[in-house]
Image (cartoon, rainbow, N blue to C red; front, side, top):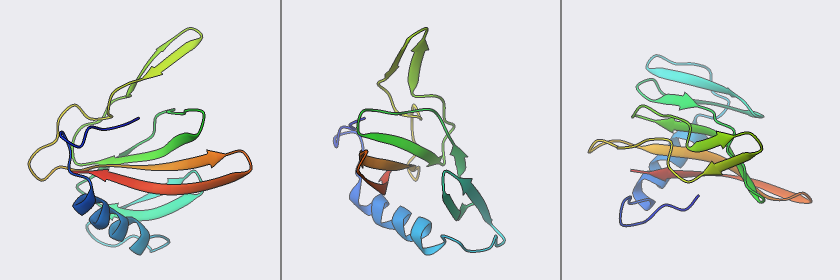
Length: 119
């Protein structure tokens, strides 16, 4: 799923989100933090954020978890035998809002994971 850079500035939030997600990975729960465990991941994140999982896959990637300060909903339209994922998991972000997705990318022979953030 591609996101227009006109709508979201990604670089500063990516640095912050990566520091939070990677720096806290494997850490025990601390006051003010929530913990995500699933999809072979475990990390702490700010308690004011929410975590959500939706079955979002493409030929080359799948989203493992979303984190956001805004309410989230399934970004896909599902019907018998078809799925179309054409929108973000949030409809709007506040001035200090953030949407992060942690995805697994690659072909069957090689996989990598990445975090992507949108302020």
